[in-house]
Image 1 (cartoon, one colour):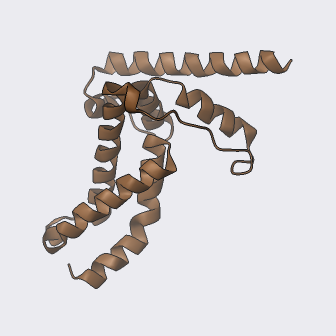
Image 2 (cartoon, rainbow, N blue to C red; image 1 turned 45 degrees about the vertical axis):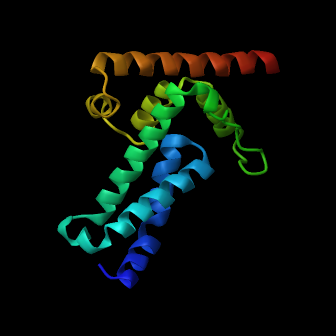
Length: 162
């Protein structure tokens, strides 16, 4: 792949890659870093990219794996994880989404990842189990705990307003 072809590819797929990374990690700056790293890897491979059937699928897979690696790193090194600050009301007019992001950010990293993969990415639990390397029962258990924690958070906030 020539440099100008690679530039066209980047312009075409960059927004989708950013969206995918943001779904996994939540933080726009971290999502941007993941996409930049992915594009650097692809650029280094540009002369051998013709052997892949779908560059979009390859790029998306690299983004997902880097996001999962980042979340695993956060889980192993919680002192280095930056607390996720919800978007301000100026940036996010929908208050319920802001509340959901806040509740989601309070979950343990593994529960965040599993919940995002299931409900935002629309992945099947079997696929999630393979990606996060846990049993399907553990995936269901983490989903259940995450949902209960978010529901509890919403109820607490609702009671505080009343």
